[in-house]
Length: 372
Ligand SMILES: NC(=O)c1ccc[n+]([C@@H]2O[C@H](COP(=O)([O-])OP(=O)(O)OC[C@H]3O[C@@H](n4cnc5c(N)ncnc54)[C@H](O)[C@@H]3O)[C@@H](O)[C@H]2O)c1
Image (cartoon, rainbow, N blue to C red; front, side, top):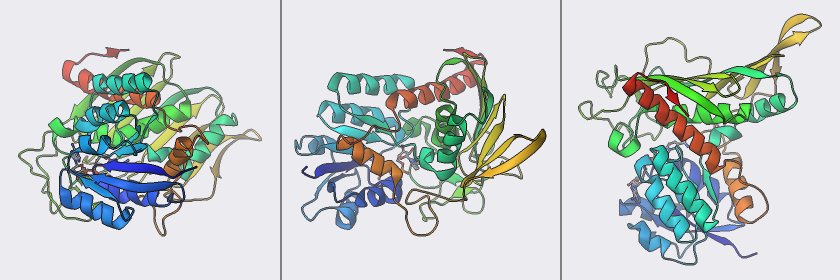
């Protein structure tokens, strides 16, 4: 089989931390041959570091999509552009891996689903936390029946301080929201997937805009993941700094979701700046803690805590400590592109996540529960 040709639209943080190193592990099967960014130096740098010798560089994604030899593209731009670019790429006959969240609004996400169905091309979303070791172990624990009927869950991604300092994360017009749509989305996606329950009854929630404009970016509050002490502008910070939501499922189960970039709390819920899930079932419960699972269950009539799995952190370049392991996200994606496997994150699942996040924002604005 000939190598697949892959293009990247958006060559900023997530491209350099995850997709370019992840896909460069797959060069037995793919050529990284097209790079697009509004800032030409970013596309040029990515092409030079990761591209084939004849890789092309663009500033207009339409020109990249007009190349009929490109099989698939990664959409790695701010959230507001996910829909427009993904729909154009699918229409141009490309398969698409789009970064999370699927879209800034459910209406946009619906357009992406429609384009996927119209074109028959593949669409997946970049929820890499599903591949982390603790979540893979948790999936097996649930599948093996240790929890029984799951009726309560918590999905958390909490930072006491950690506002992204690069890009446009504090600009609602470009991202659609703050920590809820940025990192709460990971915890919620993972929790719904572990519960294997996507049937939502109603959602209530509140988002808080309390600290974002008060923090001093250079001394307090930054998430400097990109290693550049870039600062957000307090005057233009217009997203929430934390949010909470309750999701009632049609079978009666409840998920409490919490997300923050800044909140005055001493503990990070044991999750140390990671997407974290707690599941409570009729037979047992679990929580995912960096790299492994804590199972609580009854053994010999005794309440027992068991640690399941060896503690392994990371799993994705840019999110791992030490040498980069194989990126499962990209391995699965390339296998699916080659017709050798299924997508792991379906756009239909990511659509439900987008709808729930939007419902929390709506509920916060209106003071009402949002019925699905
Ligand atoms: N999976 C994760 O954990 C994770 C982590 C960080 C970011 N993300 C997601 O990745 C996306 C990008 O975030 P980032 O941190 O890379 O931001 P970034 O600002 O570092 O990079 C985005 C890049 O897209 C470029 N761009 C914007 N509009 C474009 C267009 N129309 N055509 C071509 N290029 C365009 C910008 O110039 C910029 O270089 C966001 O949706 C974000 O939510 C995901």
